[in-house]
Length: 331
Image 1 (cartoon, rainbow, N blue to C red):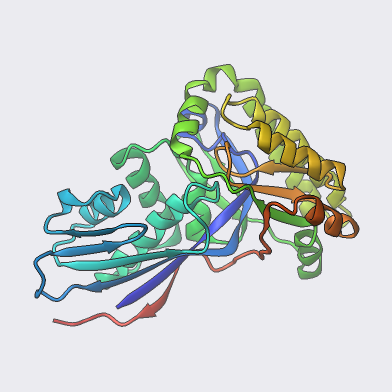
Image 2 (cartoon, rainbow, N blue to C red; image 1 turned 90 degrees about the horizontal axis):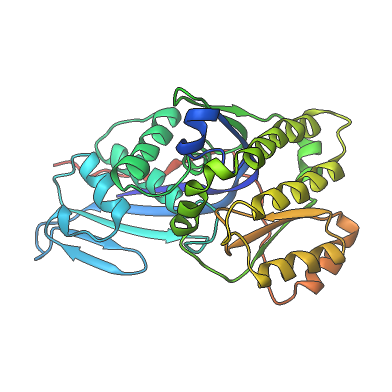
């Protein structure tokens, strides 16, 4: 039996420039971090006593005899990519609901890919892990997904990720002194809107509108360097980071008609009215989680004002995708 986990992520700046349709022509850049909310996968070889060959358990249960019968696209294509021939039982558990803007689908693919490598007694580097997960999602499944979620899930940590015009992806750790990192994290608040949506549908409109949004995407990419300067400077003003979040949210809202809703706008305006300096919706938009920058002395007021929404405490994860339990069966 093998148990693997991979972290979800929060993206601060540059989201939207990690789609190949943009960065292969203009180059992209994001800054963000993996957090201590995880996708877990438990996998074992299935004994040959059942009518089915594979059993996949997630929000539904699939008992199938052939890979082609598997409905879950990531399970089907990842198993096919890895050349799986033995019967497997795969269970998924997650700390974060699906379709919520925290990179859950990509964390799943990263987690499953690492699991199947381990099942074959093979080790995969972090770089190859996110590159192969991106290939599976973008080329095999044909999902409308960017390339940052897989990178954060594989690597963990706070990172600046460059997406090169030649297709290369380079993740650079963002280094902060422990006390300064603690102060920074203490100003961030995460709330769940309660709205789930299919990110691929919203992302498709954003991708189709890339040529119309070039100025906004360039500005959003430019904010990555501004944020990096604030976080890495010993004297950097964290409140300025919050103001940049507000600025990037204004740009982001214009990328797609589905990016925000009247409820999301009201949620954000309420937070700003009660002490937030800035914030943004995570992921493709339309729902999911909202990240807010709030000075500590105003956080109780913001929590009370957003009392109808679930507040999610979190910390950063620096481990990335990892094997939690490794007890392979030997034939």
